Structures are given as C-alpha cells and as structure tokens.
Image 1 (cartoon, rainbow, N blue to C red):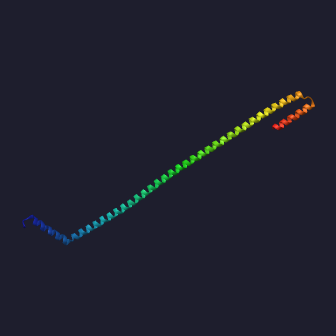
Image 2: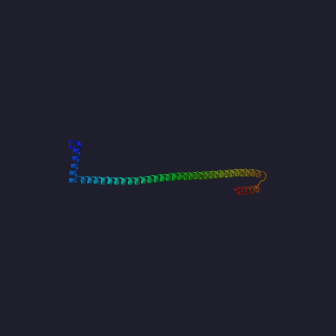
Length: 161
C-alpha cells in the first residue's frame, strides 16, 4: 500500500487540503466566488435594465413612426382635398368668367343690332323725308308748300327721334 503511487497522491492531497484549510484558502476562494457571483448578478441586472430601456425606446420609436405615418397620411389627405377644392373653385371661376364674357358679348351684339336697326330706320326715315319733300315740292307750290313742308319735316323728325 505504501509502495502504490495512488496512496502517496492521496496523502499529498490530504496534506494539501489541510494546509489550505489552515491558511483559510477556502474562505478566500468562497469570497472571490461570492464577489464574482455578485459582479455577474450586477451585470445581469444591468443587461436586464438595458434590455428594458431598449424595449421602451423601440416602443417609443414605433409610436413615433406610426404617428409620423398618420400625420403624413393626414397631410396627403388634406393636400388632395385642397387640390380638389382649388380645382372646383378654378372651374367655377372659369365658368363664371365665360358666362360674364358671353353675357358681355351678347350685350354688345344686342347693342350692335339695336344700333343697326336705328341706322336702318334713320336711313328709311331720311329716304321717306326726301321722297315726301320731292313729291310735295312738285305738287304744292308757293308759301303754303314751304310751310307744309317745313312742318311735315319737323313732325317726322320729332317722331323718329
């Protein structure tokens, strides 16, 4: 048994453990393990806290993105509505402009027709006066003729004007 190497390894191991126990190595190792355990726990807590903060930031950015998308959609909707309103107003203004221009043109045409009719009437009256004057001057002579002619011409002019 003393000649066996395993026996001597076991004896050396027991002596080493005794020396370690006497020097308090086990307490130092336990303290180091406790410190390492505390450090790992703190790192895990920090990692958990950071993960929660990251989740909050992600949710906040998702909310902001959704809000920005809604706002962009609202802007697009408002822009389309404004464009349709402006197009409708422009169409109404154009129709009003065309209607006013048409009315003005119709007024000018009616005025030109009235003026042409008046010109034709005046020319016809002038021709009738000339014809009556010629006929009266040939059929009636003297001072009576001149008075009748003048009075007739004045009456015709008064009635035509």
